[in-house]
Length: 557
Image (cartoon, rainbow, N blue to C red; front, top):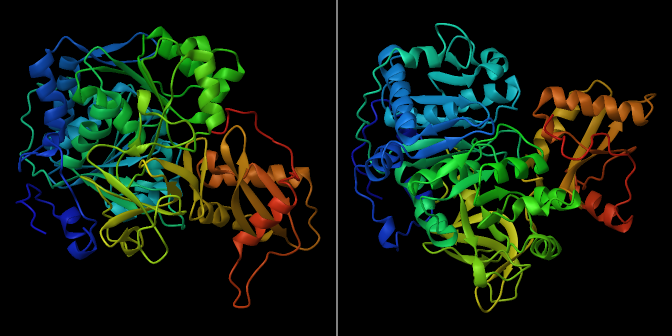
């Protein structure tokens, strides 16, 4: 596999790409995917947009009425690049970690890092210090930029090896103050199209997250496939949505897609579903990204009227049932655009829009991609047979120095870990996750990570975590726990363990359902048998042994 000459002085990411023979096949079948060898994604997204649409066009909006124009976003991105290179000594190829909610400065920082030729490491602001420390160990950033409200846990994790710069604080060292002292003139580094631009951690199905590696051309490819062909955006569109920018789903839908087409984006730091819909309606949003959970919550509050101004409503992040699809259409007239993507692929690769939608199915392979169903031996299955979803396109899985690359790529196919069927017309229908990832309200939660957190509680002997169906969130985290002798497994102990987990890992990962048991099922070799727990719940009709302790919509508190 031939790669072009890198602009990276720090060669860490290129040195830690997986071996070429373990890469998936890559295909660039559309004219829009024929990118030049030298390409800086940020320069295309902001500099080219200013040249085409002018500096005065709205780019970023917030619910309080703040609007950044394309010219203002370009200037601040350039200033960030200047601070990084002139003040902090960042060189092309260095990693820069970003930590903050969805707001304009995190977008300016993201663009500025890429313009400087550095590599963005995206992180969720809800992660705790131990989780951040793991990502720092894996990606080795030299600088971390964080919203001032999320600096504390980052500072603990960073130690003395990473320079932490906040934004939004009232001091001379703050990023905003540093930027104000810069000219705002910066020429983007002449990176290669296949220089790594983004490191995106996954939630993973083990305690150690996988870190996906994406090139500059990959960032544009999702806009030139899913967005261009399914959403068909124009410069007059206003994008809105709930996914964090640290998720590639949110990064695409709220940053890359609108900038690629000269549109604008409404950034909400955090909002319950109805509040999100209210903000979107007030801003004149025309394209909305959120999970089925949110659409159901909006309808339950009888506020479907807030969605009627949308041109496109996208549902992804978890399974969209036929019932939810029809409920939204009945209440609003909208035909929800379903889709499935993966951090490894960067964004959505199976979807359908308009008259091509078939409720209950996820859709067909997005133009630029092709997909199939594989059996456990990697052979393609006939239509109607259940198997593993596999996809090939212009993007694909590349893990940072991780042996699990061999599990994801099979004979050139990206195998996503989802079980699907495909019909004669090429429509794919979701069946289940084929690994032990729990998808709850659009968030991917690795069961082993939750198990590890629960195990730290002094009263816990052992535990096992699975996902169980939930009508509001798609799935919720369910923990089976063996307590030490003499400890009562009551409601107080459940609440205590839940609060303990919230302090150890991101709060949205905590077990909403806890069941105390005397032992866990194991095979003769001692391996825990999660499937027996699932089967037992099915036999019991999923009867809960605990009450919901957190009101709906507050799982991120």
